[in-house]
Length: 125
Image (cartoon, rainbow, N blue to C red; front, side, top):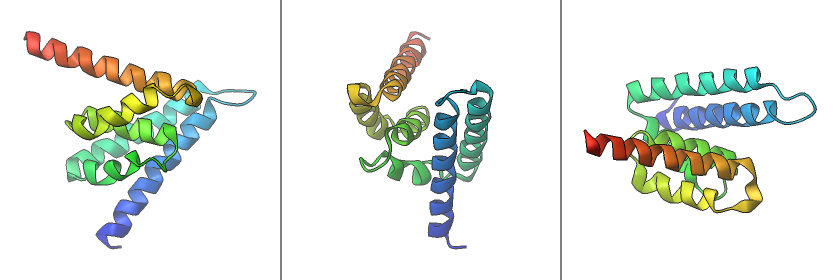
């Protein structure tokens, strides 16, 4: 498998977990436990990419406007917490301002608020 194929596969895996986690919370019988399993799998996946030094290469392309809002939000949130605020903050701010996307807008807003609090706490120390 080439490195481009590996990145594409990593992106597809990430998107699948985000979509599955989102789907677990919808419908007649939402399952927080199932959504949490997908979040845990995504966290493990991103931690492995961190070790490999490929997190930005995998996630930056997922900030594109043609991606689903939940995928853009998840990618931006992971990137924001890994020093890519220049790319991630504008994506999260645009999502937070979009009333048409429901809870994803709230997730984006919360990611920004938490990141800003963390930044403020670090400057106090």
